[in-house]
Image 1 (spheres, rainbow, N blue to C red):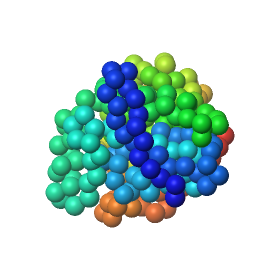
Image 2: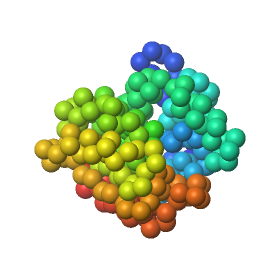
Image 3: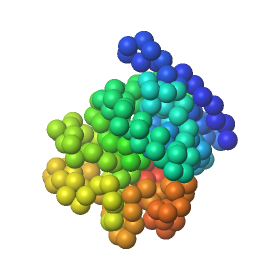
Image 4: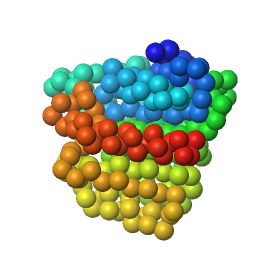
Amino acid sequence: MNGTWITIPTADGQPFTGYLSLPPIGSGPAIVLVQEIWGVNEHIRAVADLYALAGYVVLAPDVFWRLQARVDLDYDTAGTQQAFAYYQAVDTAQAAADVAAAVSLLRQRAEVNGKVATLGFCLGGQLAFRAAALSQADAAVCFYGGGIDQYLDLAARITQPILFHYAGNDEHIPQSASAAVKAAFAKHSNAHFFDYPGVGHGFNCWGRRAVYNQSAAALATGRSLQFLAEHL
C-alpha cells in the first residue's frame, strides 16, 4: 500500500500528523478514518489500507497527539490500560476540531477528486459524528460510537447522509443511549441505522479477539462501502 505520515495544519497553528493511505490509482473520493482509543495502530492503519484498496484516499489523524504523538498500542492488558488513560485525558472537543481539520486538508489535496466522509470506531465514531457537524463533511459513518447520545444537540446540523452501526450486546453503550440517538434522528431521512444482534462492542476489530466477529464485521464493512459509494 502507498501509506505515509503527513502533516495536518490546525486553526491554532499547531500541526499534527496522520496516516495517509492512497488508492491504487492514486486518487479518488476521501475518508477521514478516526481511531479507537489504542491510537493509529496496526489495526487502524490496516483498515485505512482496506478502504484505500476500495478506491478512497484515506487519512487517519492522530487524535491523541496533544497528549502523546503517534500513540500505537497493543490490545494486551498494559496497552488497554494506557488506552483508557488517554481516553480519560483527551479533550474530545479539541479532538473533534482536529478531525474537522483533517477533513479540510483532504478537500485541498490534489489526490482527492470527490467528496469527503468521516468514519470512526468507538471514540472515533463519536468524533466522526461531531466532526461531520463541524466540518460539513459530505457523509459520516459511526461504528459503535460511544457518547454520541451526549451530543445530540448537533443532530440538527447533521444534514448529510449518516450511517450508524450498533452492537446488540454492547457493554459500553447501553441500549438507552443508542435508542436516544435513533429517536433524535427518527424524522431525518438522511440517517440510517443497523443493529448487529449477539455481538459486542468492538466487533469490527480483529486485533481484539475476544470481541471480534467476522460475520458482523464483514457485513458492516460491506454496508459502509455501499453507503460511501452511493454518497461520495
